Length: 241
Image 1 (cartoon, rainbow, N blue to C red):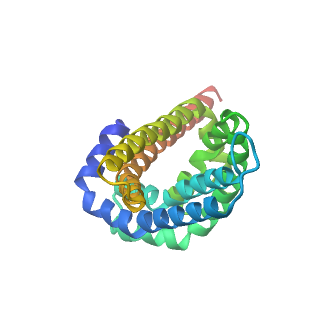
Image 2 (cartoon, rainbow, N blue to C red):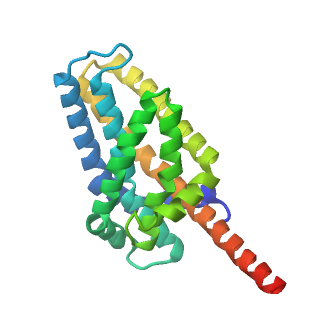
Image 3 (cartoon, one colour):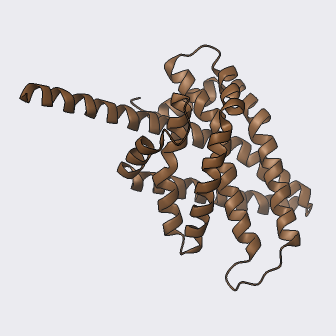
């Protein structure tokens, strides 16, 4: 993987019909569920804390959880396309259904601890999320549980911690800015809450896949770099021996 951004753009635009299938079959239902659950929580949860409510905490947890879980089919699809696997879309959907449970459990744990970290001035949660972020990707690459991918994922996450933190923070802020701008424009046309929700879901359906394709391409590149370094290290050791 020489240029992850170029590869992302080529895959996103060149295979958009398949991306769209993933958007409709996986991302859209999850976004609807996220919207319903979070709005319900805000409606029934009282606010006792000064800086944020308990509903904000639940919202943070669910947002991180859905973000991690919704990546699964895109990760597998990008990897399938990269290695030239046949029926890449079908396999991506199969992996999402068949092997998504272990990722979901891992995502629940990571979301829980990351949310606690986000409550403590943001940075601890961002560090924790970034450190374990590659684990899900390696799990989907290798078709094995997240627990078996934990060691390698943490090693890559630790080595590229700052880059991952910046990417997560940048994409989150960029989407937030676009979302606020879009909401303001929609509000000038109509005050309908449904219109606001639909516009936010549409934005996420378009932006989210591109972000995940890029992150997947980056992690493929990082892993290939690790493999090359390991081979070079073994060759050097053999020559010295």
